[in-house]
Each structure stands twice: as C-alpha cells, then as structure tokens.
Length: 351
Image 1: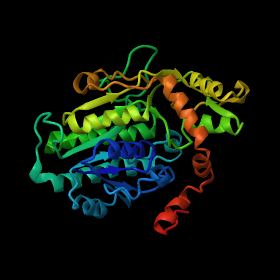
Image 2 (image 1 turned 90 degrees about the horizontal axis):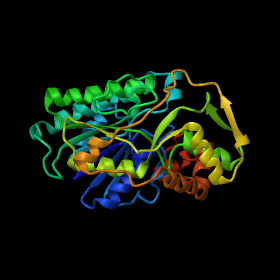
Image 3 (image 1 turned 90 degrees about the vertical axis):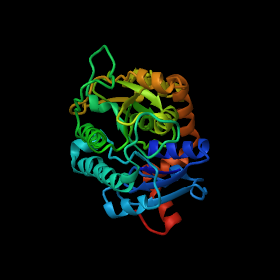
C-alpha cells in the first residue's frame, strides 16, 4: 500500500511517518512537504534511506505536482499539511486560507480524479480497504467550552481564530466531497499534542527550552486557559486505526483525558527541570483566546478500541527529558540552522 503523507516534516507528521514505518511493514510512505518554517527534515533523520520512504518537496496547492505523485499509485492520504500557529493567523490569515482550504481542495480533487474507478467505498469494510483520505484537524474548530462538558463529534463548529476557521472550512469541504462524490473521507479532530520534535513556538517546547536556557517563560493572560493534552504517539496510534478501520464519512475526536491549565503545565515543567517559578512572565492575552478545550473520545474508543496509553504526567516527564537530551536539535531550530539539513541532503538552500 502506498500512503501519501502531506506535511510529513512537521511535528505530528514526522512522528506519524516514523510510527507507520515501524509498525506497518506493508506500507510505503511518500512524504510531501513544502518545508515552510515549521517543516524540518531533521525530524526524520535516520529515515531518509529507508526502502519504504521517499520525500518530495512541494506545495499541496500545486495541482500538477500532486497529480504526478498520485500517478505513482497512491492508495491513501493522511493530510497533515497546514499552517497551524494561531498567533501567526491573527497577524496574517492569507497563508492559512491558501494552504488549509485551497490546498485541501486540490488534494481532494486529484484524489477524485485518480480514484474515480475505485469509488465508492461502502461501509466500514475490513482492515486494509483502500482508497481512503484522512483529513487531520483540530478541536479548535469547536471554539471555546465553558467550565463543564466536552466536545463531541456533534458539537457545533464555532472557530475563534483565522487558523481554526480555515481548518473548519477544510473539514466541511472534505466531508462534502464524501457526501457529493462518494470520496472515502474521514476527519479526525485531536486535542493539543505534545512530544518529541515539536517546533518550539508551541507552549510545551517553548517553556521547556526557555527554562533550559534560564529565559523568561511567557504566559498569556492569567494562565488559566485549559487544554486537553495528548501525547503525539497516542495520536499516531489513533490515526493508524482510523486509516485502516475507520468508517468513511465519519468524524472521530481524539483526546488525551489530560485537561490542565496553561499555568499548571508551566509549573510542572519548571518542577521537572528544577527551575524557579520566578521565570514565569505574564503577558497580554491573545485576541480571541479560547478559554477551555476538552475532547470526548468515546466514539473512537467504542468503534476502534483506541485509548491513550500515556498519562500526562508520564508523557510530560518523557518529553522534558527528550528536549534535555536533544538540545542540539532545538538549538538549531531556534537559530535557523535546521534549514541547512535540507541543503546537506539535497544541495538546495532553504535560506
């Protein structure tokens, strides 16, 4: 089976590629990534020469390139490719609409063209039935929760930021292709991920790396915004189950049962690193900052048997230790030197 993973040089995508190559010996992976600022081929160091892996640098908005890749016999797609940083979407929404909406549309159109004779796929089917298109989304499309309750797959979409609005649009477009054309699309919506290889603009790696450098740890507002934390390996296992056993046309929420306030997360990191809480700096809150997210994953548990294996305490401790042991990786990311890895591998500069 040939699997196209878009955005595979990013945090979750690279972890997923490593996971699939390790656990699914019958799967070959084509990684398509534009290598924008958050795409880092160092995330896949040691995989470059794997016999079941290939990399193509390119944009999912490039219809000609996407068609050429599909002509190699793509059987399934897992679409991670996205602009994903909320703060950047507030400053300029254009790249988010371009990649997250139009890029998804290009992938869907090419999949329709190349898979036309293999459609429709009816019912859940046995493991290994293809083709299938997995659209990887986020719980942020649901907006903000009050102090009680959790998001279910039936929760209304109320995105708060340009980022989450673009992801909601892509989700609806993907599901419309299933309803209109019979394209076997499955949408997943996960809670906040953490773990190895996460770009250090996100909360957990930013706080870990700043603390390791004895730099201030910036916390938005009062620090009491709540997120449901999911270890990236648990997310990868969930995506594997959805890919091989999920039902086309369905949405699956993936949550880690790990609700914590941002301040609780920051304090736990400082405690694990033996750094003082005096490093915390409260900064002006982000516009439209959702107060609370929490996912109800009972559907994916009931249908596919998935449950998170990492408690937040265990996962955070392992993540802190990974960043402690891999200081050269994140120092190169923060300095921009990580772009030179692509130059070394392919002889073309990203700078």
